[in-house]
Length: 339
Ligand code: AP5
Ligand code: MG
Image (cartoon, rainbow, N blue to C red; front, side, top):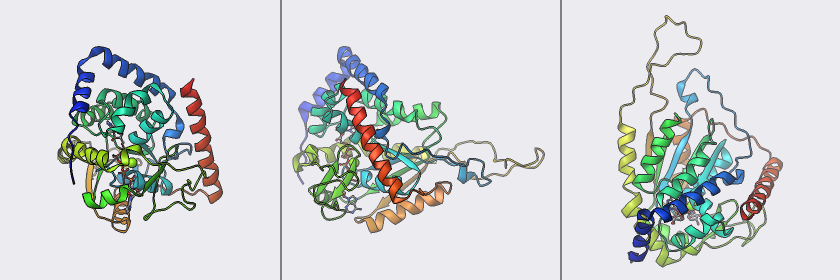
């Protein structure tokens, strides 16, 4: 596979970093974007989530705050979508966020459009503000971040932000899929832009060709899914994003001193018992080429480490209503942003 280095894009990013005028323009755009905070940006965000924190096994109190990590096309969006459909989890994809803004011609979208189209990375300052404003609304929810962080700086900033809120990451999953498998998937990929739902003509085709299963709206091709741009995205992953795996490996091995666990009804003079700290970061790499290999392993990791996760109990009818609400929320968000 040919990897193409994009020199002009790199210098563009550097000029953004070094120019205060550009930087403040990015920050202003991020602030205006953050304030819109559309509910529809979180998959299944409209459903309230209640969690029983007072269980005797400390693992039941452990909240899923997860990074879905992996190369472009590894299946991050597909597997996050599956988890969200089955469990009380919300997920946030920075790629989906950016595509919505590009589609809606917002200020953020206009700034990001060319970079995304060329397979580059949107500047850290903008991405961080975009993401943290959403994370702050996820207290007491199980969540997955897909596509963030993508640089070392984003990783450190995210870590600092979450630690300040006392909501550190609890799981990093690295989807390890061979490059040749990914390349063959991408040509068959179709997406539903408002929800981020992903289809593949051979793996998970839509019920009606060209249309989203839930809303019946048309599916589109991503402009950055052509072979040349995809090669560039893969190169960016290896050069800039994959080093984060070492960063998280170190964090997961770091000693965390937490007080011994006490049962809520334990007598104060009884000895407390030591267990695995509920806030310890776990890291798991899952290798595979098919969903049969990856999905059961992913589910096993989550169930073992987060037994407090609850399955959704929605009826098919409620699910239909829910996806309709998502579509309506998305439409009203678009209207609000374009004002
Ligand atoms: P983003 O949208 O995040 O793109 P990406 O990381 O390149 O990942 P993809 O969405 O392409 O792949 P995926 O892993 O979600 O795979 P999918 O589930 O679709 O980001 C786009 C752009 O936005 C970036 O290039 C950048 O410019 C910008 N950006 C975003 N975040 C940023 C950040 N933090 N900082 C700076 N810039 C940022 O699956 C792929 C295909 O495979 C599908 O067709 C699917 O149906 C199929 N498939 C999935 N799983 C399986 C399976 N198990 N078996 C068979 N087929 C499968
Ligand atoms: Mg994706």
